[in-house]
Image 1 (tube, rainbow, N blue to C red):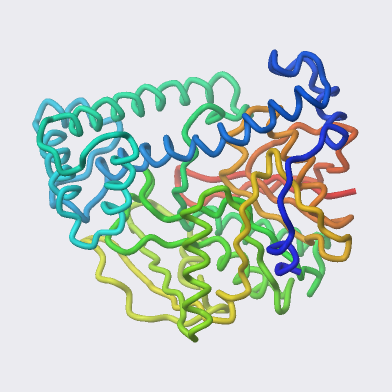
Image 2 (image 1 turned 135 degrees about the vertical axis):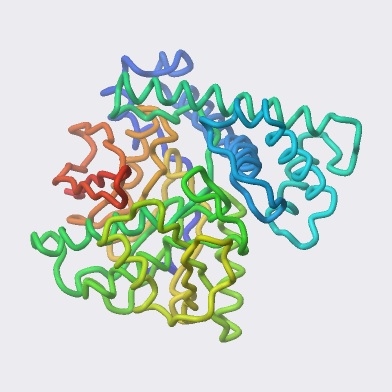
Length: 421
């Protein structure tokens, strides 16, 4: 069960375990793996693990830029969409938001996002309290980088829509409600098709659930940071009668995510619930099914409470997740690209969910991740991900199908189902 996964020690996958993947993808191997042997693999995999974890820092800087453009907790000035940055620069709006952010960083007044960014800035060798202009320059330089990368990623999508477009981007923790709606719709289809049966799911893992910091879709920051997916998956499985007394293991490489879940568990041990704020912008054109999901979110795992007052124009709900549901989630530090857990067959997972995770890795890394996922799933177990992953005959994972779901007039996701042979 989840406790066993929590107790197991993650280890880097050995060459014997990944060699079939390396040989099948020989044309895509980096120079360091031109010769496939234990020494090269051990050296490369350790460097890769460190590099992937280091990308979290750049992802945090990306989140700072998103907060600059879309945040409302540190300023009363209008938000700026990416396509409006040039006009905002000419009008002085961008400069005003930068000045407001710098003031907020100097005096965060309990704003947990600003406190986090102060620590981030110190790790960059800068003083958040200084007025010498260096911090402002750092913000502008990273804004320009993010804008350049946005253009580059758009070109990648046009050239190869199925390729992992963020394979060299900072790993972001941002999370919203939309992927959880898509997962529920996918689970409903799997149930209707008989792929998952009533009460068939007991052990579940969520890879990279993220934290609701701010992003270009919503940018809400008027409430404390929160994680949604561990509780959303629990809620959906219960609503669809696919699971009873389900346990959720949360795999992540971010200490922020892992510590956040552990703090929630500590509250749960004290008999205290975990509150999730659920803002919704009526102007975003959500589909009726997505609105229904928003209204139902948490009804099997908690109860409605009075939400934090949202900015003007937003609808809002809030749900208190029961302590027993919170305690059913266990955080585990695991880099699924390179690490594995030695789980007994009886304690492997029935279902693994990974949304907006594999898009950050190249094809070789994705194949290695799929191999490691296969060792976590029991035979017949299902992986749900919104990325098409490289299938290799030697990896006992096969694509069963996919579910396309729209959650607004403009946006949607396709979730791919893989089954462990």
